[in-house]
Length: 440
Ligand code: FES
Ligand SMILES: [Fe+2]
Image 1: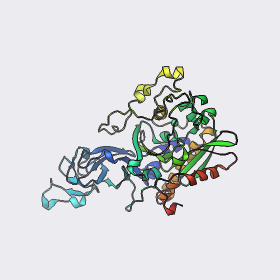
Image 2: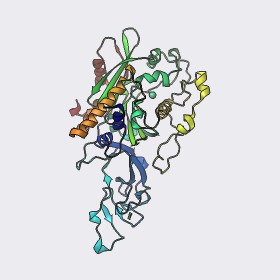
Image 3: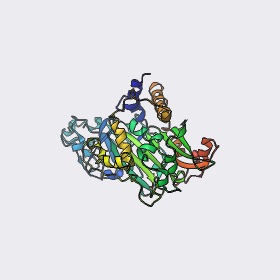
Image 4: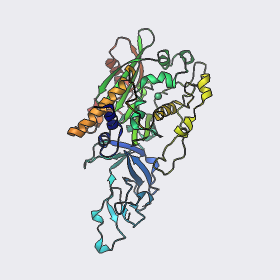
């Protein structure tokens, strides 16, 4: 297979594409429940290249449907959300959240054919403050995935969204690229500036970690290791989970309950959804050895106000049009390696700077990129197997498989096999939502 063909099959997400059809087999986290009010304004929602409209009806149910009215294609975004349905303002046809046409007032009663008309609506689910959409073809929808962080009660969960102006794959790959951490984020930080108890210092003492990569039931895993104190290794374990989730190593393993979705809006825009247990230990140091706040490590997002456009939700103020507010002075004088605001923004700037869809033929992937290479291969194999033979994608029918995926950093005695070291951490980790018997 050519690199160009691989890239196209990995990155294109519209209807009929290899990856697009694969992703449609999964439930997709699409919005926060708080974005839709009962009988409130309909919301434009772009998912996998499809222009949809989302609304919450009078009873609180969420509808997500193609924006085109099935009568004559007027946008249902302009519709009236009233009395348990969305009414097209062109000729007054009204649709409930399942897509059924429940009123056809422009047609004389004896000619009414509303029972023959349906809006193209997708099944939705709402759990712990997140709205999920199923865009696949099954009549009987699959179960929601048991992604641990998404099972936390909403009050125990940090949830936020950020739009990114690039393809979903390069955005996701930024999360499984461990060797950038000591440069992009920590390039101007020296070990002696960090608190001696802070394990993050191992990442700056050795900026070129070795690591293991392997397939996992939920996708792929890497375990990067560096020498720590004598007789010990410092580990950073992270996961890719089908079809577009990551779990990062940035958190102390025992409490690091988190998951991050890279949901394709279309081929060139991605909605990032961050879910995290509020009680988890902070993932970056709160202070340097001298007590000062570490530079550029905050995670506060500076958003533009949301608007109603297709690309109007959860945009950051710093973007490609203003060079992500890069501060060359800070870059020069060592206050920051990049001169770019904070960890999230640094990742955002770098992946957006690759262009809308990174050119895989331009790349030179090396040993430090093995996780990326393997994840691309795993994705392509699974997506092509679905396309060719209908092989059910991993996790679709066995949602509990996700519950076993955990990531984070930890120390172990040197000489221990990495899987053993990791399994010991998994066995001892906090489980705020418990483990169902079937997952044991
Ligand atoms: S186009 Fe929607 S009712 Fe006619
Ligand atoms: Fe990063």
